[in-house]
Every structure is written in C-alpha cells, then in structure tokens.
Amino acid sequence: MQIDWIHFTPWPSLAGGLLLGLAAALLLLSSGRILGITGIVEGLLPPKAGDAVWRVTFVLGLLLAPVVAEWALPAGLISTPRIDASWALVVVAGLLVGFGTRYGAGCTSGHGICGLSRLSLRSLVATLSFMFTGFVTVFIVRHVL
Image 1 (cartoon, helix red, strand yellow):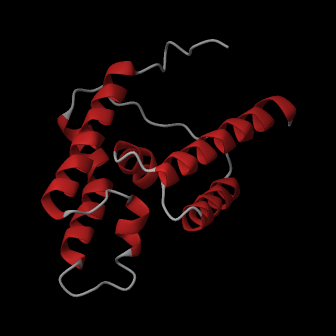
Image 2 (tube, rainbow, N blue to C red; image 1 turned 180 degrees about the horizontal axis):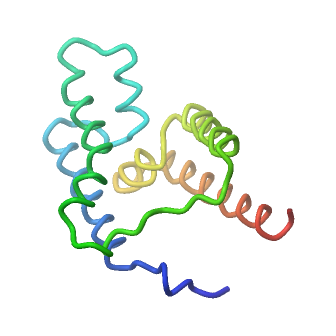
C-alpha cells in the first residue's frame, strides 16, 4: 500500500476533525443534543414546533460551508472531489447508507464522534461494524471485482 502524497491532506483533515469535535461538544453542552446528522435531518420530517429552527440552520450551515470556504479561503487550499462512479451507483450507495443509518439507529457522526466520546458500547459496536464493512467493500471493489 502506498500513500497518495499528492492528495494526502493531514492539516486540513486535522482542522476539520477539530471543528467537528468542537461543534459536537458545543451542541451537547448548549442544548444537550447529539450531533448526529441523520437524527438532525430526521427531526425535520415532520418538524416539531420550536424545534425546526436550529435543525434548519444546522443543515443550511452544512450545505453552505463549502461555498463559503471556497469563497473565503485561498485558491488551491480546497480541492474539488472527484467521484469515479456513475450517478446510478451513487444513488444506490446513498440508499444503502440511508438504510444502514436507520438499521444502526444512527450515523457515523452520531455513533463515531458523539457516541464514542461518551464511551457508548452501542456506538463502539456500530462504529466497528460500519468501518469493517467499508474496509471489506473497498477491498472487494478494488481487488476482487
């Protein structure tokens, strides 16, 4: 295995991880809520009175952050992702992720970031399960198929 040094981004990745951790801690400390993207979006369907504003604001922040970062940060600091897959494959993958988050009662951010930081055994099992499944899937797609 070789590291793709051209696309290796340890400093932006570290900064992103620190910001995620800070956001998770601030949401938990300020409102007692877990930063799980699936749960936040699911809470909008249907929205409950008095609960929708922070959820909509959070989702808008997720959607607008890349646009603001591209505008505010120096050129070349942000790379455009390249997806080597058809739209059909991307849609199927998205549906499988959605199924997995419902089946696992949470998503990678809810279990992997917030659950593990709270020492939740359920989140540890969920995180190990989706990481192992991801490793196996990549191995099969890249080396078997």
